[in-house]
Image 1 (spheres, rainbow, N blue to C red):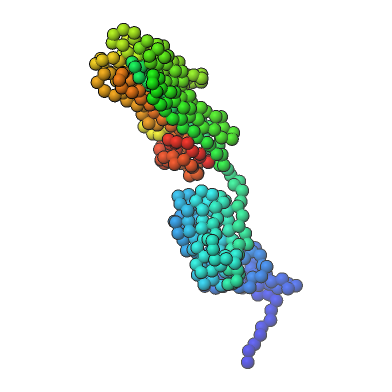
Image 2: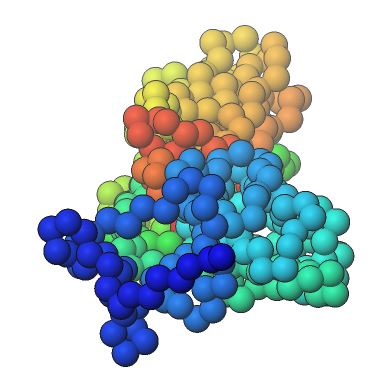
Length: 426
């Protein structure tokens, strides 16, 4: 024979209510009490009760490329370093729940893809669901074999603590080319730096990298501009290096001026004018034996006059990639017969030649000017430019086009080096 004990209130030995019923309202414990549910116990049939959750949030953040979930879990997924493939539970039961959330607001860069593991998702077995919105949290419930897993919440939340940061830029244009016939050296590409402050996520920065000038007869062409631009940014553009003078043709103006031919005048640097200056003038030629052109101007120094040796002007150093590196050196001039050849300036400036060998082209992605050429040799191309961005490691989004070289941990900075056109989204 069974017994039933009916009470409205259960108290402890101190007279405190443990369970109390009053007008069909059942109170367990009092404010400030800790109510412990033993491990392995299950709370079921909660209906619309508030204050309870069947989700157990995991203390370990998922950072791997794959992860298998279990029903009832809340999962933080950090895709800062890589995308993640999340495998849903096998043989789920109706009412099974799962929540997964963007831990670092990086799903827009590296997405989370679901492996359905034999179940349907919103009634379909393919394609695989992909979640690629930064700041997103997804709550799914298993409804049965007909529709399978169904999201009941899959929205992104606003970033209430947006972080601002600065990006440093180096913008070097393409170097100028040389022609043939006792020519000067090509001018180095314009060299400019900038810092954009107070940036936040979502700004698209478009980068254009200028080509070096190409050989011509009797004169080559100037280098092409390099620049960056974006909404809310100040567009920075560097001018291509000027072509060299030759055979009565004057040197071209540009970021740095092309050196004069032996019988002409040099090009002007810092054209168009910027503050600080983006480059220097080319050197004058020498109209006496040994006939020699002038060195191309460099970002850091004027081209040397032919009578003084015709070396290209040195470029300017930058430590944006870590070690101090020269960019935008001027090309050395050509000289007749076997007189000592002229040297290109530091920063990719090509050496000029004499009657015993070829001149040297400007260094690739340095913006160096091409070395001047003495007959019968051909002139040389200028070096292609470069655009480099540097920002705090924690602020790098990973969203790029154009295949730049990305280096992290450069004194706490991530360096993005564009050697061709592309974009970066903050």
